[in-house]
Length: 175
Image (cartoon, rainbow, N blue to C red):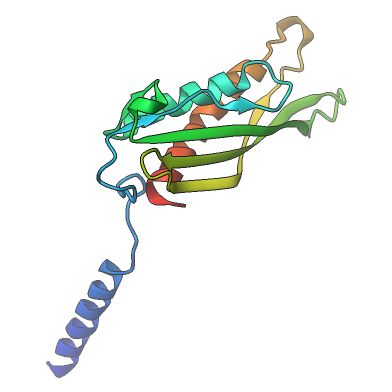
């Protein structure tokens, strides 16, 4: 009986320790000040040669904030409690997989590098900053010339959505 009581005590102690260890479900924590109600997200700056990349990323981040948080997103930075800025610094595309029979690429890996920062407008306090935000997404390329389909634009759209999800989680949880 004493062994049983000890094992219960150990189990309870482990449960208490595990409960306080900081594990939580991603997306349930908000480390931003409670006073923030509105966030402005002006179009990101694009330093790459990829046309409209900044628009895709900005639109995806706006959508993610609206879908995943209770913040109101406004267009005018002067009407917001905080402003999210982004600077797309690089876009790279490299072959990821080759078809050994044809020698053609079958999969590409696109990498976007950004600087992102969130500033509380009234105090000018930086609430979040990541100067080396990197996001990667592979996309397939058809090897059949007759049914070739340019997968780059859909891949960039997928990458933008995934990027936005990671960015909003990073901002909310200060990753």
